[in-house]
Every structure is written in C-alpha cells, then in structure tokens.
Amino acid sequence: MTIKPTLQTGSQDEFIGREKLIAHSEEFRPRVVHVTDGVYAAIGYSASNVTLIAGRVGSIIVDTAANPVDATAIVEAFGSHLVRPVKAIIYTHNHPDHTGGATVFAGNENPGIYSHELLRSATPSMGRGQRDGGDAFGMHLPAEDFINAGTQLEYGRTMPHTRQGFLPPTNTFDGDEKPITIAGIALQPILTPGEADDNISVWLPEQKVLIAGDVLLKTFPNIAPLRGLPTRPADKWIESLDKLLSLEADFIVPGHMGVIENAADARNALTAYRDAIKFVYEKTMEGIAKGMTPDELVQQIKLPEELAQHPYLQEFYGTVPWSIRGIYCQNAGWFDGNPTNIWPLPAKERAGKLVAMSGGSAKMLESAEAALAAGEFQWAAEQADYLLDLEPGNRAAMTVKMKALRELGERQMNATARNYYLSVANNLKARYLDDGDGLRSPA
Image (tube, rainbow, N blue to C red; front, side):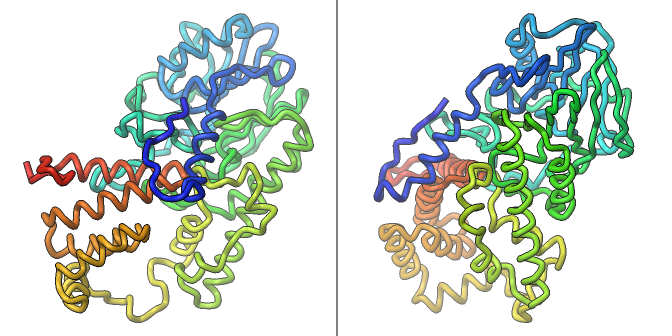
C-alpha cells in the first residue's frame, strides 16, 4: 500500500521526504524469499519478518509475526517449504511484533521455544502517554494520511496489539553463545544488544546465513525512540555489529524489510551501520566533554556524505538528531550546562512574558498566522503554543497549531515523526465542533 496524501501546498521539493517515504513502502511488499538451501524469509505479511529453516526431519521458525492472523497467512505462504513438525521456535527478542504468532507455528507439535534469558525479565515498553493523541505508529490515522510505520507497513492498524499468540520460552541462552543443533540443523545464537537488550542473532554456519533480529534494519537505527522509551545503548550496538562483521555472512535476514543476498552487500551494510552509530556516538561524547549543549550538537554533528547517502541509513525510523539528544541525556543527564536552565520559568509564566513582549495575544496570533502563511511552520506552532499555554481554549491559536502540525507532518521522510504530527493534528481537530473555521467548540 502506498498512500499519497492530497496536501500539495508549497514547491514539490518541500515534499521530497514524503515521496521517499512513499517509495520506502515497497520494502513491505508481501513475498517469500528463498534465501539459500532450506532457508526462507516471509517479508511483508506482518509487522516483522519470519524465517523458516527447513531440515529433513522438521523445521525451525525464527520470530513468529505480530499475531495469530498474520502467522496463519505466513504458514500458508510458506506452503510445502514448511517441513512438519516444527521442532523449535526462536525469538530474536521480546518485542510483540516478533513474538505474537507462536501458537500458530507450534500447533500441537510442542516445539522448544528458544530465546535469550533476558527475554524472561523483559517488561512491555509502554512509552509516554499519547499526549494530544500523539502516536508514532499512526494507528488511528485515516488511510489518506497514513503511509507506513518506518520499519513495517503498519502495526496495530488492522489488528490490535495482542499477546494472544505468545508462548513463553522453554529453553534460554545465557550469553555463552555455544553452537547447538536442532532438527539436524547447526546454528549459533549470538547475543547482539541494540534495539533490544535481549536481541540475539542466529548464525547458520553451514549456509553462512545471518538472521539478525533488529540489530540491522534498512533505516537509520531508532536509538532514541520518539514515542518515549529508554535510549538504546549505542556502545553495545557497535560491539554487536563488530561481532556480526566477523562472521563474514553471505546472506542476512533482518528483523524487518528485505534480505541481503551476497557477501559484499552484507559486509557493506553492517560496516555502514556500525560506522554511522559509532560516528554519532563518538562525536556526541566529544561534544559533552567540551561542554556543548544538545542543541549545539544537533546543529554540528552531521553524518559524512558517504554514510548520509547510504541506503541502510535513510532516516525513515530513527534520526541523527534524536540519537544525539538521547545519547546526551543517557550519558550527561538532563542539564545542558547553561545555568539559565537550572530553574527555568514555568511554561505558562514564560508564555505570559513573551506574549506581553510581543504586544499582546492579538499581536502574537497575527505573527503566528503570518508565519504559517510564510511557510515557517515550526515558528507558527511554537507561537501557537505560547498562546495555548495562557488560554488552552483559544480556538484561533488551536487552528494555527493544527495547520502547522499538518504542514510539518506532510514534509517528513521519517515515518514516526509524520505519524506523530498528523495524529496530534487530527486529534486536536476532533476535540472541537465545526463552526465554519475548521475547528470545533468544546463538546
């Protein structure tokens, strides 16, 4: 599905990010890829990939899709490639989009359920509350607003989040990374923390296939998720990628999106991913040591051109600026070093002073509307927020904010940013009754 939104204000160059995001949806085209002898990857049938390793006496399933409905479709898509019985199910990590369909693959065959020991203690990540309806996955956006979710076509839009198909592990790895044999198939689980602390990559040494989990994706990594989760440890992520580079894989099946099908491309993707994370991490740490603020670092740190243009580092899911801010906070705390910010004014008090300084609410509203008309959408939204801090029911300011958020959202290449902007804009509009100006009076 590639939905092209209808908003077309401004020059076409302004919407180049949105067009790239639309093109990115091709990654989620449903298909079964024959990776190499006995190894198949189901891509695009669910929020995450499912890998089938077929032996003579049974099969292994790595990750199980997001829910039983998707898993059933994948079983059908695998068809005769799926050799019964399923001897083992391996979870690369705890995220529900990878663990929600296990019951379908297991059936009545009682396979071993394998994971890292850390999966047992992993707690569901709730993120921050959906302030004003904000949602990085765009679960409630109408079809005309939605494109994709960055690493998946959609998650939670057609099927609610569910743990109905999850089966708890019966066999866990403790980090020793010892080779094992299941159904006559030799494999090695490797602890590779990155997007998840419990992420394991599954290495098939005979086939030279690496099933990576979410430590490598065809998008800049989501080191500091917009939806509100702990910053992922960049230093451990770098170490994980170094481990995987040492394997010299011929094939890589990532947790989402397409398969890498030759050794040169596999090395290239892993190297670029490692180098990009390392660059952002090291430059941020250097800046912290120099006393720089997060805002200063975001303006200064840019990927080298060869990394910025790499197909595995396009900012469809994570971004360089968010990563910088997350790494800063994780390593240096909330304070940016400017003493003015030790005890900042409350938002309402600051807004009152700024609005008064601008000549009053009418003048600031006039300025916000002028910024909106001039295409200065961020400034328009910020001025609207000052007015709303003082008067939460200010319908004219809400109109400006809603329109500014829509304009900002329509220009995004990053799926999570787009979905969040548009979800909040739609939610703000829905909270008011239409009086002819596009907003509603409080119901």
